[in-house]
Image 1 (cartoon, rainbow, N blue to C red):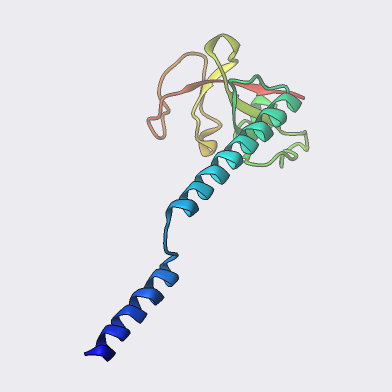
Image 2 (cartoon, helix red, strand yellow; image 1 turned 60 degrees about the vertical axis):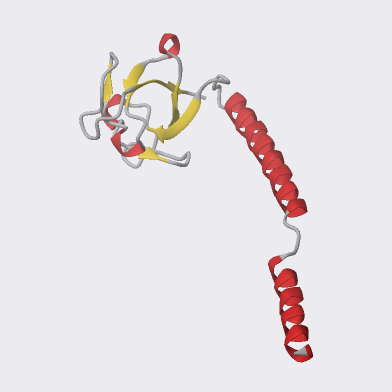
Length: 135
């Protein structure tokens, strides 16, 4: 009987050690580090947006060729247009008064643009006010 009690206590101790014991401090640390990371990401995004000529309320969606005939060229990274070699520009969701066009927020549908609000012909998503940020 003593042996069983010792084994049960030993297993309980091993289980607590393996599971990390009290989770409260770890949760606080994770929460704090997430908040810090979120703040750092927000600061980075704000800095990037200021550098690219974006306004604080704007959100980068994709990069595209500034030529209307190449609006189907898109990328998640800046670079050059595959068809003409021009520097790609940022396509951002903005406010209606700042927009150049209404577009689908999906990168793959960058070619679908309208001069008025509506829905994307391909996926049915609501078209967002967008503009191209030329740096």
